[in-house]
Amino acid sequence: MSRIIPHSSLWILSAIGLLCLVCTSPATCDDVVGVLESFEPAGDDAAGVWTIGGEVYVVESGSSVVLPVSAANSERPLPVPGRLVRVQYDLRDGTRHVTRMQLFDHGPEVVQDGPHLIWKDATDATLVTVLDGSVVRTELEDLAVGDVLETPSRLVPTITVGAPAELPSASCPEARRILAVSDLEGNYETFRGFLEGNGVVDDSGDWIWGDGHLVLNGDMVDRGDRVTELLWLIRRLERQAREAGGRVHYVLGNHESMVMAGDLRYIHPNYRFSTERIGLSYDELHGVGTELGRWLRNHNSVVRVGPFLFVHAGYSPELDRLGIELDEINRTIRDGLGPPAWPASARADLRTGLIWHQQGPHWYRGYFPQHAERWGGRPDDDSIRAILRRHDVEHVVVGHTVVDEIGPIDDRPELIGIDVAWRDPSEAEGLLYDEGRIHRVDASGRRSLMDLSRPSTSSE
Image (tube, rainbow, N blue to C red; front, side, top):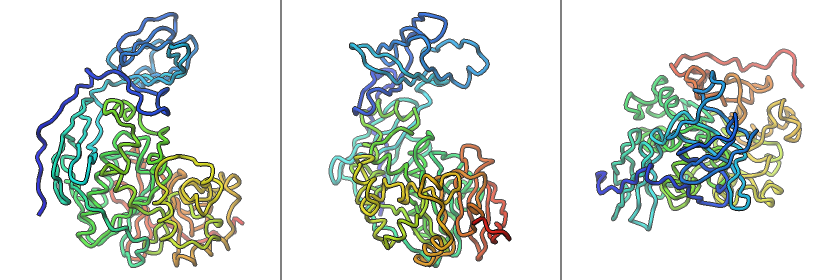
């Protein structure tokens, strides 16, 4: 039986009282987000002396400054103390010289992150949540698998301590109903509404889709500001789906591997602020010593579900020629997740460097005409048929490369692209397989039967 552990004995650290910018790793020392305290102008533009998070920065005339949305109609917007500012800088003679600055419309009070369960040992952990810009820490002891932990987060009020899970199957050919989406990039609210509109979850966000299979085809992380909440939602739905006879397949993409390796170029600026407050880097919050980090490392990068082969970026003919089966591909990638990012040896050898090689499943873009030349040329139909035969599927489904709408790539029905924009609910789409037919579905659940016939004139 699960224990419910209440949220109590909190250590609350005020964001206003912790404005110093903590450099958590050398890679982030020149790129920080903090609260603007004062600005002493030295000209007509942003030039002057800025005090941000207790540190002084010099902005020279002509420096790159990205203005907030609210300044679109203002010729010379005034800096607003109390709001967040992102600065990239060079340290010269002990002085921080700004190379690029980004001003935001909001202060720390809108920053939310977590919960993050950080393990000290096998039974003791710290629960860390950033709530309205403040860090809340809860020290927990004697935890056991199945314990339900209450958290301060409004979107993730409880989490369940997980067991070291069995590795997920890389092949579920029997799936009768499949809904697949890709590249959510932290857009929690849009995704939650999409699932509800398509009858996958109820209005409480709980699984109601029975034996259906939900496929998340990579890049759930980066860019958006509700990544953590999205990950906990996926984790909870995995458990609920399995209990109902269904499955959630989380396919890892390039941004998951980048985060776990410490390449943090694409995290939302709010996470730079929150990690500085917490005192751990973003990759450490997703490391092997955290609940989310352990869970992320337990997923596949290529899966067969029903008549589809799901892979985040693409399954290249070069990868196919290696003759590696799905389980070996997934094991090799799982074993290599983590730092360092972009090792030269891994980029040189596809067999041992599946995570970082451009012909690997996290990066390959050769299916798309606009990218094919850079990725070794457009694969011919025989190469695509060989991939389909090897894995006994009818279609390869990819994200990674944005498409206007879900559908065939390069007029080839064997290849389907599903990476669409998720910031705007009106643009959200998924691929639905039901009763042997393939549909495009929107956030309200409206279906459009997809035409997957070959055009009369070959594009070869």
